[in-house]
Length: 161
Image 1 (tube, rainbow, N blue to C red):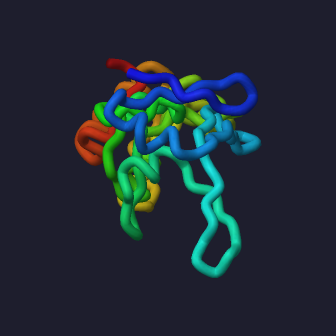
Image 2 (cartoon, rainbow, N blue to C red):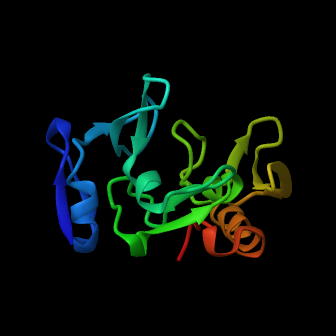
């Protein structure tokens, strides 16, 4: 494992074998405003002379249209090959934790004031699937996990391991 220095005092992790490829570029730390994790990216000049950014994990996996890299451990700076896999957009979304500001600490679980119960829902192939209402938040989280295992497979981000 090798550490690649980024801006803002951050480092990205890569495999030793990828150092020769990655070290040819200057890498920056980038984080979207509401994102939980940041990524390493570099600037690339396109054929028309304009510039675009290229995330390190995209560069390493040379992904094709319709697919994107997924960080298995959800750490956007861990670009070791054992931590990267190719996913479609839905699969990549499956491997995320609960959203900031959610009414529950558990993924897929939301408090419904009007019913005074926990609603459980999951995204399945881009569509919301409602799994039911629960009086107990932990039971609701387990119901989400069961559905995530069934429909998301290896990309499931579970509340309980």
